[in-house]
Amino acid sequence: MTSFNKLPPELFGELAKSMPSRDLMNLSCTSKLIRDNLIRILFTNLSITCPLASDKGMDVFINRWGGLVSRVHLHLRLIPNTSDEDDITIPSLWGTPPSETLKKIVHGQLLPHIDTLSVRFDPEQFESTGSWDGDGWWGDPMDLGTIYTFQDSEDQEHTLQQEAEFIWRAQYTEFFRDVSANQNIRHFTISNLLPRNSSVWERREWKAFLGRLEEFDVSVFGGDNGAGWKASSQPGFADFMESLPDYFMQHATNVIRLRIEAHPWGLFGSAGDFGIRLPLRSDIFPSLRSLTLKNVQIGNELIEFLMSHGDSLQELTLEDCMCDEGWSRDSTPAWADLWKTLRADCSNISKVSVVQTQTPPLAHMEGFEGYEPRPDSESVSKIRKMLEEDESLVLWRYVAVDTKYRMVFEDEERNISCFEAGEDQREYSMLLTVIRERNKNTLIES
Image (cartoon, rainbow, N blue to C red; front, side):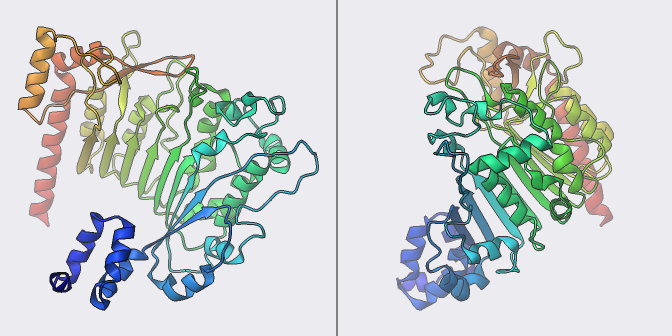
C-alpha cells in the first residue's frame, strides 16, 4: 500500500482505465491519499436507470458529490400497456411519483455545469408481454414489441393518438419534452433511437436544443423477428429514417462532431434498390468538422454529402462499414469512388480512419459460428499472405443486401475480385499520401 501512496496523481487516471468500478471503490477505501486521487474519477459519471424505483439518497448524493459529476447517463426502459382498458393512467418515466430531483437534472436546473448527456433506450424492453401498438390480439405473442411495432408509417395525427393511448409512446415523448428544456447540453448521445416519431420534435424548444449542440452521437434501433426479417424491412422504419434529417439533423447547425451508427439488423446508408438513405443532406451540418459512421452502407448520398462539405470536413472515421457488391448496378459506389471523392473534393481533410473489427471473408460462411475451413484456392492463399505481410493493405468489405428481408450477405467473391483489381487500395493509398503531404505542409506553415 505504501507504493500505491507514492504513485504520481496522473497515474491514477491510467489505473482507473484498467480496473472495474467496484475495485476502484475498494481501493479508494485504503487510504485518504488514494481516496482523494480517485474520488473525481469515481464520480465522473452519474448513471440513472428509469423508470426510477426510488430517489432515496439522490439528494444527498447530489449535494455531496454533484460538483464532481461531468456526465449524466440515462438508461430508459419503456413499458407497454398491460391492460385493455381505454382509460389508463400513464406513469412517468421519472418514477411513481415522479422524482423532482431527477426531473431537475434532466431539465438542467440541478448540476447546471454538466454539458454532456447520454441516453440509451433498452432494446430488450420489447420482450415484455403487453400491448405496444394495439395491432395484435390481446395476449398473442405477436403483440410483443418486435420489429412490427415499426411496421406502419405515421403522420403527426397518428403520433399524437399513439402518445395518448400507449404508455411507452407517452414516456418516449416525455423524455424529449423534458430534455428540450435543458439549456446546458452541448454533447448529446442517443443509443438505440426508436424509429417512431415524437410530437415534441415539432416544437421550437426541441429545435433550439439541437441548435445548441456541438457534438451529436446517434445510433438507431435494430431488430429481428426471429424468422430473418430485419427492422429495416418495415415501411415505418424506412419512412422514419427518411424524415430524420427534418426532425433532427437540419436543426443541429452548430454540430462540429457527428457520429451515426446503424444496427446490423437495421441497415441504412444506400438508397439504391429499396435501400434506406443515410440521414445526411448537402444542406445540413454546415459547421461539421468530424464525421464517424458505423455499420453503414456506403452510398451515393454519402458521396454527395462529402462533396458538399469539402471545405469544412477535417476527419472521417468508418467503423465496420461496407459497399454494395454492385455487380448489376453501375451507379453503386465502390470504395475507390469514396477515396477519389475525398482526395478531389475535400480540401481540408486531415485524417481518415478505417476500423474493421473483423476482416471481411475470403471464403463462403467464413467467420460464422460452426464454420469449417476448406483448403484455400491459390488466389485466396496469396491474398491472405499479402495481408499478413503488409499491414498497409486492406481487404475492403462488399456485401449484398436482400431487398425483402434486408438481410446482409457477405460477398467474398467481390472482396477477392476487388482486392485483385487493386483500384480500391490504390485510391486509398493515394488519398493517404495526399493527407500526409497536406499535414506536413500545414505543420511547416505553422
